Length: 204
Image 1: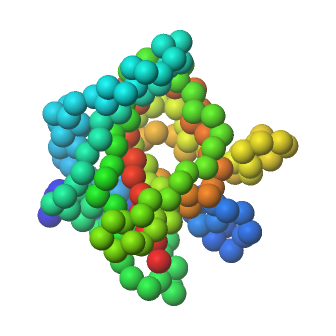
Image 2: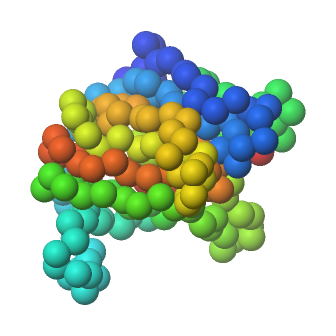
Image 3: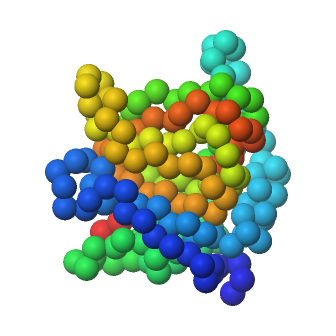
């Protein structure tokens, strides 16, 4: 249906799947999600309460507004897993379909200046199956003509911290997937709003 498919979707490998880097196999899918679905996700985000724990942070540090959502009925999960399965770089030895975890968060940047320092992500454990997630997904809900890129790095510190392997510009409908252990950073936000949906996936 129009909610699920985008005929113009394209995939680009960001880091060689056969290399030894912890981000091996990272990729993006452009136009992964139709604009009508993006609009529905933005409406959903607008209906959610802002996470109030952000108020405890240093007021001098610019950060995103966070909105937490549990996709209990699987509407978003089905769309994302379908896009990954159709267009993603799933290895031939894959043991099954991608599994998108239900707990997700919307991040919404309304002010320029936010920066996310180099880091790696933690995995999550599915409480029902005890399976551990393997990859982070970022679905961009807005375009940013300048700034706000997610950069995949050679490392989180030292000389490798300056080794940018790929820089992903926020683009509406663009889906970025990378292994949790891949060092990455959020470049300074210039063009606002920057809005995205983030969560975890198992890629077998």
